[in-house]
Image 1 (tube, one colour):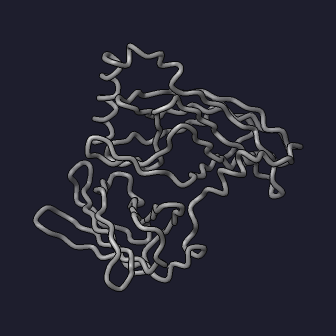
Image 2 (cartoon, one colour):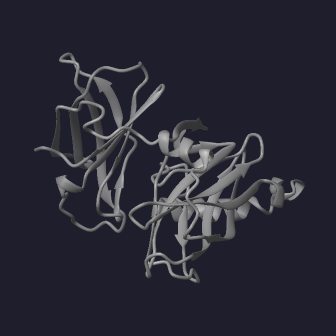
Length: 267
């Protein structure tokens, strides 16, 4: 509901100051064709270039952002497309937090073919929000041929893959405890992660397996025992009752120079 309202505000903004800008020059998009892997899958990337001062959003963009949507219909010899998200940045504007990317985004894609050893044709329609002082909804359409004999790695895509968040194992996370509670305002969630102390200014983004559950911006801090604690509140977007699946809780830790992707609670 919040994202729908933000989308409406973006559309309304086009009637104001956006008219003074050439919207077509805000965003450029292309597919980098990448290379075929030994397992038969193909690595490609959606490459977005934004005008100075503009940004776009991560898969979980915060209340001030608009999540991108992908449609790969019309592709040939493509069974599935997986999106790999490089570590995003945190932005604050008008007292609201958003999560995304500024200036440029190389979004690696892992494509599985229907028939092994054959060329693929990838066609995508992507709806996303781009924001500066105003927000503008944009739809881009991209197409690329993915040859079966392409084996040379694209260093631009390889660089984006190297910028992926660390896994739980790579970051030496020892334990993740999730505690569900309630107060006068509704359901609460407290996560406590035994994670080595990194740079100051760590923030977290919390997601659930149920897209209908809204998660508030967490309060994140280091406890006296050194554990990273996040406290947030949960609500169903349609006001319905719900149960939280702890195994579907996903916590992304974002700090200066590092990010960690943690999937599931231990308890």
